[in-house]
Amino acid sequence: VEHCLNDNVRGKPVAERLKPGPDDYFVLKPKHSGFYATTLETLLHYLGARTLVLAGFAGNICVLFTANEAYMRDYRLVVPADCTASNTEAENR
Image (tube, rainbow, N blue to C red):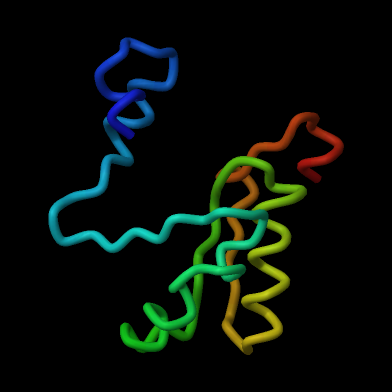
């Protein structure tokens, strides 16, 4: 986040809009799924979440794998079509 906000990169306007606030939670994701080797499941349980809205890059990999694991955990899912991106339009579909 610091790199995107301070180094005048092309994604700076997006990073400014998505910058976490002091009361926001965040989870570092080491692999493709947001659940794999993270504290996401514990956090969602603590928050009482039942519905997840997923968005992000690598819609055909990271968003897809996170959605699969969320589905297996019985979460309701919303994945807005205009809030994901993949290497190609076909892969994103």
